[in-house]
Image (cartoon, rainbow, N blue to C red; front, side):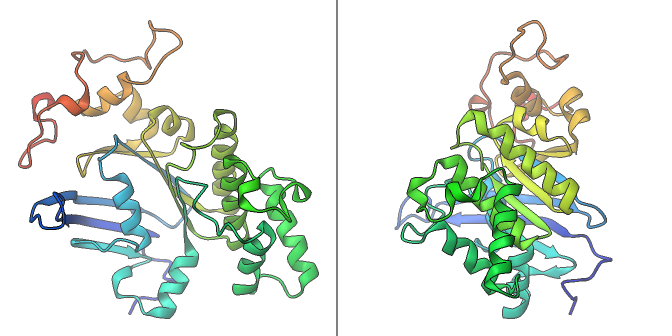
Length: 304
């Protein structure tokens, strides 16, 4: 069996993953929904990378995230962490995987136990993973983690989650990640429910984690402007399929798929004469209005 520390294998390898949900029309329905259709991606482990997965609601982004985290079982294909299939991990290996691959979810309001003060939330991590030899060292480590995500310890420690803003709660999640030092973050629409003024701060912290701590990140968003800000690699999803991927600049500036161009054209611009150097001409049709086919391109009417 492959060890979780196998450095020769990719950090994460998703191969032809399929996910089918049944009973989509109600409890008695036999209707099936294909949420993921042969989706593949690879994150190498030689250096920290940032991959943004972008697409509309219903494209399968969040389902893919939950499958990678092991929260939703896949219907076909494989998901391997350092060469080991996550569905075949034993209890000890799964615990190690959950420490190495950490989530940041969309809703900062439902992440925490409302009866636990922030001190307890962070101290539980330190104790569970034996990150500090003494309470004094634990306190110093927690203070360091909070400052690393631009929070002042005396402003948040001793308070309950409902006493913090959405942005502060999300940064507490990042402080938790700072303490654990995972290899990979799965961030599913993490800035959609926080103030616009704090979104750039959150994104910059993720970039610092990549550059300074060597933590890779899969960032999921419907906002192409956010994806472009982060840089790195991009994968575009539509109707459960990966339709385009590559370096951020090359995909945004020279998209090869018309659906990617539709996403680019939907980004508001301060200068209507300069819309990200768009060169392709498209009709004014929403992506949700296009005709989809299960046996061809997901937007068959616009395939080149």
